[in-house]
Length: 236
Image 1 (cartoon, rainbow, N blue to C red):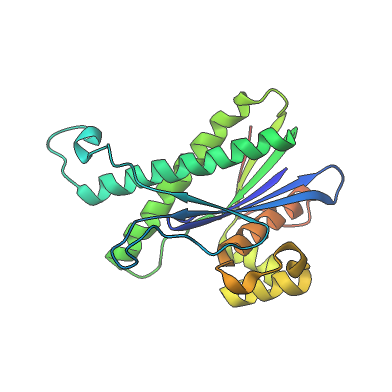
Image 2 (cartoon, rainbow, N blue to C red):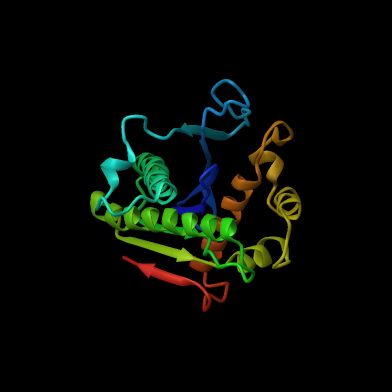
């Protein structure tokens, strides 16, 4: 099984590809969407239904306070505590989705591709906080995956790859700086995207397409068709 993870607090895309030969026999898509119950909408956020995409909503717990998470009374960083809690909750939902799908397909080998984050070249407090939060989320996901291998006796190999976004875009859309629109266009043109996601005009799919591109990177890595020198490979 090859898994592509496009991590995001608001909308994580997940692609599962199950192989019995060199051709995928099953493909499954997920979107994990955050519901903040914002006053703007006045009601629970419900994403558009997109055919062949399983959409899951997660929320922050209401029965945990920042004081439950403080290590010392000298620490009082509300934003940091909130980000940590959100990363934990989001990573648990992602891991639960992965566990359920592994249990369905029962693969003996798994490759997981997660985009490697690069710190921005220019300064900006909000951007730095966003990247730091995503790095934290990836850390929790990777930690959960490492523990996951021992949970299933039929898994012989688990590899975690973290390719740079530029490498994934270059392989998938022939441009290391491909836009979201160009990635979606390549999905339609080169990967028979309309058969995989028939009604993409009614909802957001860029995160799902990005997770598909990451899965394709993992597929190419498995076939030794790409240069992986800039990517971290963890084999368990």
